[in-house]
Amino acid sequence: MISKLYAGIDISATDATLCCLDSEGNQLKPSQKFENNLSGAAQLVEALTEFEAEEIHVGLESTSVYGAHLRDFFLASPLLQGKAFVYELNPALVSGFKRSFPKKPKTDNLDAYFIAERIRFGHLRPFSEKQLTTQPLLQLTRYRLHLIKLLTTLKISLCHFHPSAGEAKLHDRLWSKTGLVTLCFSNSLTICRIALLVIHSVKPPWQCWKTFSPMT
Image 1 (cartoon, one colour):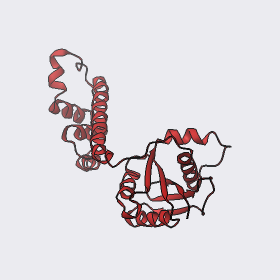
Image 2 (spheres, one colour; image 1 turned 90 degrees about the vertical axis):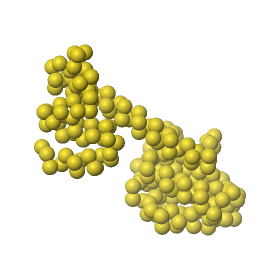
Image 3 (cartoon, helix red, strand yellow; image 1 turned 180 degrees about the horizontal axis):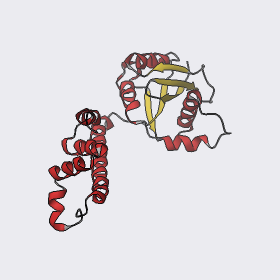
Image 4 (tube, one colour; image 1 turned 30 degrees about the horizontal axis):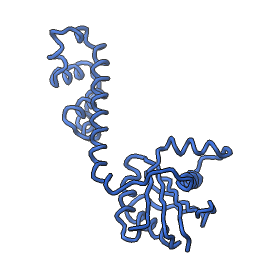
C-alpha cells in the first residue's frame, strides 16, 4: 500500500496508455495499454485501484473528444470516490515539461510517463465535478466562435468570385443564405457549399458532405 499514486495516461482515438509512479518517482510497473472505450475505462480503474493508494492523482492531456469521457468516468466511478484527483493538462504544458529532460523518442509509454511525472511535480488544479455542468456550455461557445470565424473567412474568400461583392447595394442580398448558396453553386465550390450548409443549418459536416457528394 502506498500513500500517493501518480498515474499518467496518454490518450489516442483507439487506446490509452497508463504509467504509474509513486511519490519518489519510481515506476511501479511496466506501462499498460487499454482500449479507449467503456470496457477499457473499467480496466483502467481496476489498474489504478490495485495499488490500494490513499490518494490517486490521474493526469491526461486535454485532447478534445478523446479523453473527456474517460475523465468523466473516473469522477463518477465508485471505486475512486473520495481519493481520486483528475487533472486535464494542456498539451503545451506537457511539451514544455519534456524539454527539461534529455531528448528521447516520442512513444506512448514515454508520453504517459512524462504526464505522470508532471502531476507529481505539482502546482496543478484538479478537475472538479462542478466543471461537468459548465463544460458543455464551454464546448458550445467554442463551436459557435469557430463557426463565426469560418463564416467571416468564407465571406472574404467569396469576394474574389463576385466582382460586386463589396458594393453596399448588393451586400445584404449577396450575403443572405440564398445568395451565398447560389454563389457557391455558380462557382462549383464543393467545399464552400459544405461549409455554408454547416453554418446555416448547423448540420454535422458528414451530413453536409452526403448532401453534396454526388455533385462536382
